[in-house]
Image (cartoon, rainbow, N blue to C red):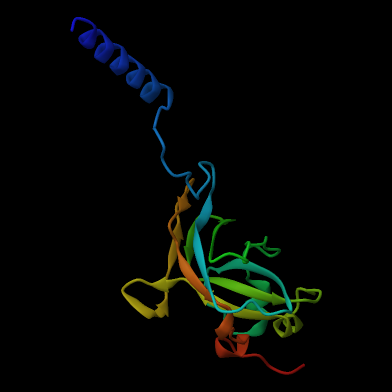
Length: 174
């Protein structure tokens, strides 16, 4: 019987050592990098990925674009990175200057070369955008704080309901 308290004390010491060594324990890895200045979150994908898919990326607009010219010229970042789209959800992060952004959008890109002109709208579709939590029929404003990130900016991209740029902005024929 004398060995039982010693065994319990030894087990408690091992558990305490493991907990101390793990520091914060088994916590989920953060989506936002600690040094990110920008926005991050998760995109949930729905629908069937079109065969002609080349890329999916996230773009941000400080003011909601009114024309195709603004849609291309005011996109941040100008050359966006890719978001993995073959699973049901993917973490994303975008480096952006601190300020408010009126439109954060998931963009589907068809196979083809972008020219950074309004002609790119032939290759691009809106797959989804961050919505105002209080009124999901409206785009949500995202504010990137100075020296930090706007995190947990989650939204849905739906491959079965890709929308043309003309659903959102005015494009004139050239």
